[in-house]
Length: 334
Image (tube, rainbow, N blue to C red; front, side):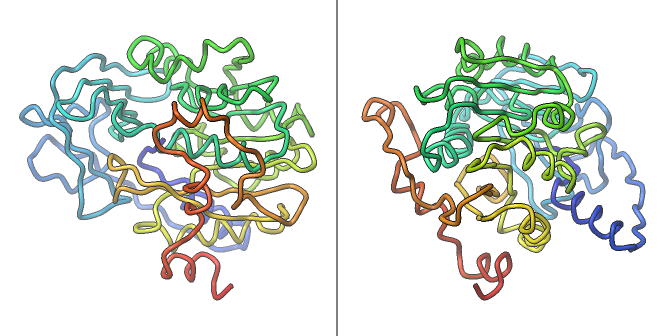
């Protein structure tokens, strides 16, 4: 899930500050409704992103490009306690869920992100019993975790309760993940929750909006330390890793920052046309062991594979094969 403030850049700034560097942040000037927008962030209600019946996603993190969808009907548009929330029915991508002007998911392609974020760490773990999701209030990751009968307990920490309720009403194809009896919902800060639950989880998945206000803590080094502390030995984390076509120079500092914490740190990705440049990655790290997560250690049931739209055991392994430029930039000459 994405908003205007980039998670990896927040971490990068935090590391600079820890190193004693001085960082100056220039205030961004709100723009006005116009066919050509160059100033960010937009007005608080983001209504200017709807022009002539089309939704236009523009952002400073993908300069010089935009993604546009034709709107059939606006279903919901209000501000929650934390963010602007928009849901609309599109002409070609089904229902579209937008937070602070940035597309979080569409009915057409959400499967790739949800399935890969959940199934890569879960099938790389020999026996995941207890799983924690930070963010993920749309329920999509929960839906995929629930496909694993070996999982006994699923815990989710979502800061914005409105996201859950709106998703249940307008995105039932994703929010049905909340219907599983193994799911326990906590409306609270994920970092604090993990600090209170040490060595509790086999897998931790962070599927949250990029940091704005209170969410910033989710993408700083202390949060990764909290994840490490809340993992059981042999545990796996999976977090959003952004786009190699746009942010490869920012992904490397994140990987390098958490390498001292975890035994293995790897990067995988999936294709998803409604995200900038049609791609998004995952940072996947393990606590204990040296094998990493590139090869599934459990076989998916045939019935499950028939229900999935994106994930397969083959694409699990292929997701870790990076383009040459990305491999060099993230991992050097390894």
